[in-house]
Image 1 (cartoon, rainbow, N blue to C red):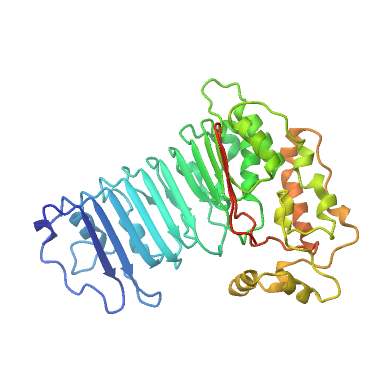
Image 2 (cartoon, rainbow, N blue to C red):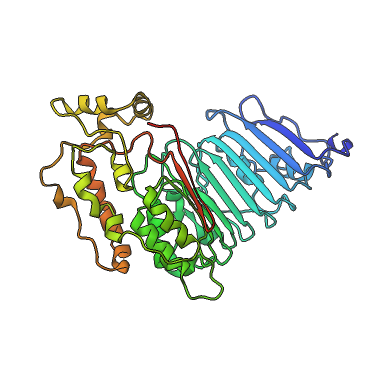
Length: 426
């Protein structure tokens, strides 16, 4: 019947799967293709308790699988959107192989993960871009040699930050956007000549600094991404590592190498914006020393309980109004008093617990947690993980780990301009 609509280019359909909603009789004949439809949206409705059919199994009454029917009905689509409340096997099997022989753009929206993609799928060979939104969907078994743009947006608190995206399975991407903790890369043995844009997002529940780790790894192995010109980090990296990265990457001697000329980060101290812009423009510039830009070089401020500030802001050398815990009260009371109503709501709704947002009582010998800062840039990079583990120990300082305003402001830098957007005061 759909084939009668000769001018229809876009079609949306809701499929009810499981329970009472089952196909009970086979189709009389092969479905008529709707050759004019280019954009298809499929919404899957189900409940996790329902018995879900396996779309790859042939029933004795059926001559086609569910996937085959949809493939034949919409053989000419180039844009496909799959939306469901739960992560269902049926939507993955729809895109396994070349059932859609003209598919170029794929969008998958999942609001709650319910299953794990345990088998490897081969995406359509015509596919150029993938957009995945929603819960922490496991994409570790997906791969494609044709996809150029890979975009993954994870919302809420990650339940299992272990589902890595191995970039080696996507050798021809030119744009990458995903949570920083998901990236998996064998840096010494990788080279992505087409990759020119990277956007890494942050998950607030993860304390390890994956944004700084990426900058450190790229500084050590710049030839892994030789043509990168745009770098966007939702969480600002440590400043010493970022400056080392820009100086190493932007002043290579390779003839065909690009420089990072477009940089988007979280908030930054005003006095380092001009040096950052100069480096993005390919100009060497005077700047504070690596030691002065590191948290190790600013422990006298971090350890001073007369000065306000959460740990995350102190690490980025940013002003922060949050005070240290007032004395004369229990740890729980002091923590509760220092939190905003938003922080309290966020902690309770994410099952964090108020007291867990702070560490233990401050230790008198705080210097024992501070590692020696290296004298040369290579060792600064190589020993970064050691300093990051030491930073984790500083959570006992009696400061809030991260305030409501941390990361709210944004800084956008190119070789020609520098813009700083201000968020709501906290």
